[in-house]
Image 1 (cartoon, rainbow, N blue to C red):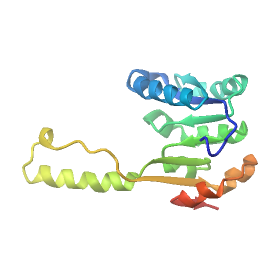
Image 2: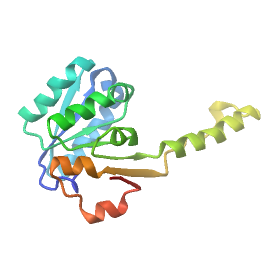
Image 3: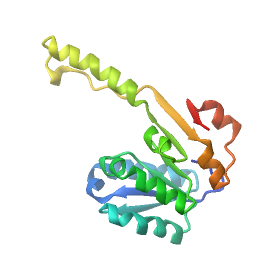
Image 4: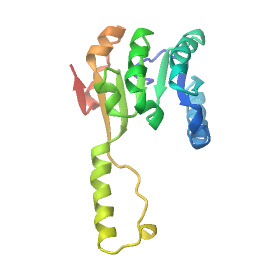
Length: 173
């Protein structure tokens, strides 16, 4: 996000209240990292889909310059509405799942889901051959992908830095 909006000093994070206990450590780490970068993190919690318009209005009222949306069952279920509201409010939003950008979002950076599914097949194979699920190692994602939507960048009046474009795995024209 720092490369997309280099002058941003206030960044909002959209957080579904129902997952707060599960995401609390993540938000704390995000807040600490933002502070090291001189950025104030503003957490905007929502309880249901009907709260989304108000959340976007609140991020403007809070004078945030960008928004971060993490993939969750809530955000995935409401992806189309989130992308629409981001466009309506002219907000640069970073997601961690490619589907948001394919739906018109600006940029995503996160684990490659096809790679995760491919790796999961190895675990299924081991289980079918008799391995106990509890004995299988927990794997962290090793392949991440960045997707940038140039149409959305243009609509927001953003120039994507060439260095960022060169690192993108996929650019939607």
